[in-house]
Image 1 (cartoon, rainbow, N blue to C red):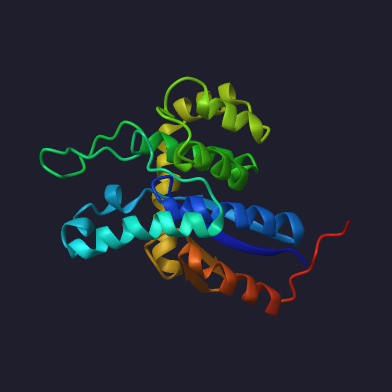
Image 2 (image 1 turned 120 degrees about the vertical axis):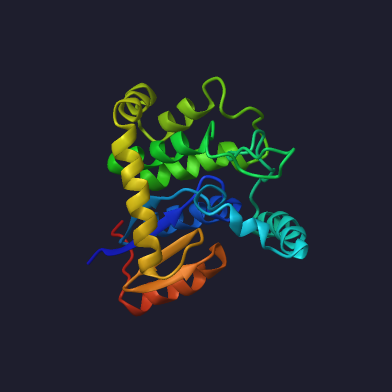
Length: 218
């Protein structure tokens, strides 16, 4: 029996980038399937979240993401440009954003075509892997779509034609995420239990094993 989980995930989250390779490997080896539900990052949903954080929160975060990427053996660098634009003069996040809404809608469209997890994995590697500058220009994202078997022209056209509907899907995902037990990403929901953070992957896998997770034949 296929075990199903929900993945709430953001293109602006380095920890979201860090969990996708393990989920890809999990689904390749075991009869497990993720329902991929992209959401907007906190900087877009609730930007005031960052205004109330102790300065140590951010300094520890910067240290931890580099350490965690090294521990996992993943290439890493802060995106150039950041998927979420910050007005450096005011240290605020404008409502109008040049990248994150379309990125997230593309993720939803890829998920609707059955390639959500693979698409998130490829695109987040382009954005967070530290090797690509100006990932939003040229054919970087188109090639990522092609690598997972998607037609980048068709995908982009679908997002252009269905922007409002796809945005509504993202909004619904965010409501469902809170109902599932947390607001942060990456978050996995399985059998009514939330697993927040890429460092909860082992506990998630443990729960799957308790539910009889089986290896794929062959």
